[in-house]
Length: 165
Image 1 (tube, one colour):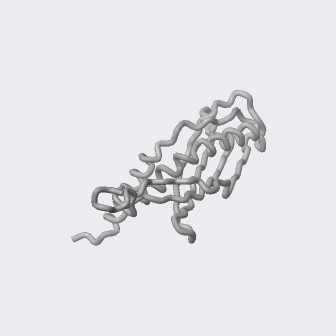
Image 2: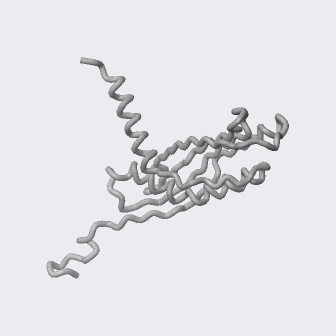
Image 3: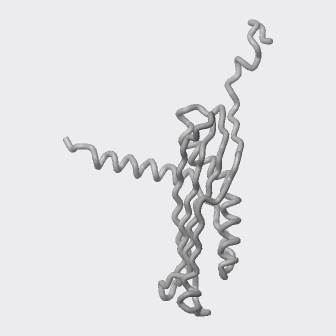
């Protein structure tokens, strides 16, 4: 009890807490285009990756589903021929408490994908290796930069759609 008789817990703001309840592959596709076209040993891969994020509230209280969507395409630097295409949707279900409502959106699209990233990286590495290529070890993804660029893109869209005065 504090000096004024209130319980100590009532005076302190609720601590932020995040628990990963589940994580899973929602969708996975790997196409070894090089094998279908006939392998050539002197290819030099050039990897291009697109990352998209999505989050939604679930019916259960304080639960959210966060999805990281990757599209990875590897092309030969010399001929521009596609070597492989990997598409992956990796989801996590989170129980989150203590995050202010105005901070929930960035939290879901930055912190949650950051927690799932090591597992997603392992899947990409295993799938590319099992698909006949050297394992693709992804560099860390800057989820803050992705979030900021998406906000900027949406603001530009809104400004372009606003009637000119």
